[in-house]
Image (cartoon, rainbow, N blue to C red; front, side, top):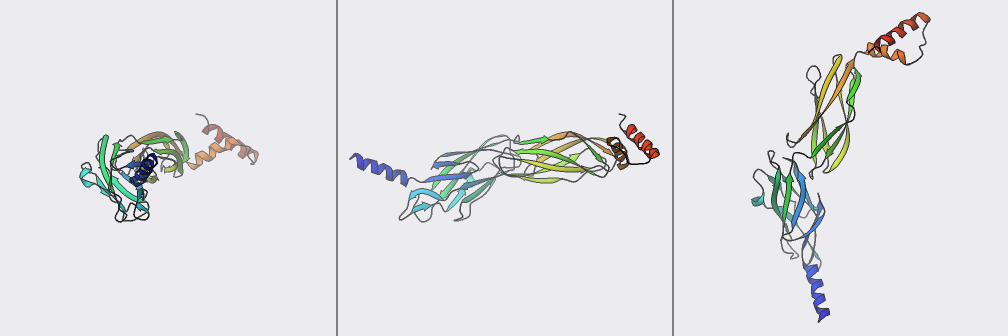
Length: 267
């Protein structure tokens, strides 16, 4: 009798359909399970990747999930969805938060369907936090010296703490005239990347720069960092360089170039 009961338990365990989530987190849930998807920013597009295996004993083989569909009726106002394609492997569905979504917890459901092997439809209840504080921006250099009309190369560390992959735009202000060059960087979910970004000054002088990184999905997710750029003419830089080594010139020219180096380093 005990052996028979144990066998029934094994059959029931194998017969119970489960939904195995692969990304952005890893979890295996029964129907009506709660899936914590972490945090995303306003407007960001969250990808939910599900394995087709259901763990359910079909007629001859293990049943496979054929599609996952986000329940539109459960989506928060202003959010949108894209259901998984039929029979794709793994299954991929997308949910996009409203661009003006406020910080806080939001919930929605998705259903996993099997069309042929008889696995019962499974409903997964999802929760996700929306936060604008999911981007970090670190600046490697706070002061740089460059020639006029020559690129000044700054290094940044971008960190995307969101459960959603996103693209971020780097820009700068503070240069004379209108600096319009930007750089767009794609960041996978929960990733970190070193990025270079160069600016060019058309005039000599010292300039306080403000760099901004913002999400393409929503301007609400952004970070700023400040630096100072000193732009000098090529002649000034050449004069300054003369103080860094022995000059191979006749004696009169040596004296003149030495004077140039002395003047440019008197600060």
